[in-house]
Length: 244
Image (tube, rainbow, N blue to C red; front, side):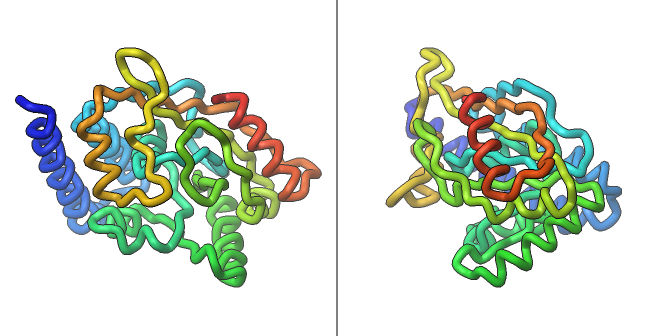
C-alpha cells in the first residue's frame, strides 16, 4: 500500500478509536470504580499509540497514587496519550481543548481541569481546585511551558500552577517527552503541533511519517520544601532538561 493509503487507514482507525473511547466514557464510566477507570484509560491510550504505529518507551517509575504533580515538556497533541499510556493521571489543560473535535469531550470525560490562560482569576480558581485534588490523593499533570515547542529546546516554565503543589505539600515529578525516528533514532518533528500547524495537519504529518518511537522519561519527585513557586518551577525545569 502507498504511504497515503496506509495513513488514511490509520486515520480511520484513530477516529473509530476516539468514538469508542467516548462511548466507554458515556456508558461504562458511570458504573466503574476509579481504579477501573484508570486502567481503562491507560489501556485505551496504549492501544491508540499502537494503532498509530508509535512505539512507547518509558523509563523511570510513574506515580501509582497521589498526591503527585507531574510536570512535563509539551511538544504534540500526542503528549496527553503518552502520559496516560505511561501511568494514570488527570490533566490541567487550556480551555481551548474543550472545543477540539472528539478529543475535547474525551478530555472532559476523563476528568481534565480546564483553565482559561488569559484570566488571572481563573488561574487562581484552578490552582485552588488542583490543591484540593492533590490533598485528596490525585495525580495531576501539567505542561508548565504553557504552549508547545518543537522539542529541540525547553521553554521557560510558568510558575503559577506549581503553587498547588506547595499548598498541598505534594511532590512534583519531572517528566521529559520526546519523539524519535524508530529506525535512525534521530529526533522527529513529525508530531509537533506548533506555530501555524492545524490539529488535522499535525495528525496527518504524524500518520505519514516513518515509524516513530515516543519516549517518556520520568524523574525522581521533588518535594517543595521551603521553595516558593518560582524556585520550584526553576528546579523542576532543570530536572526535565537533565532527563532530556
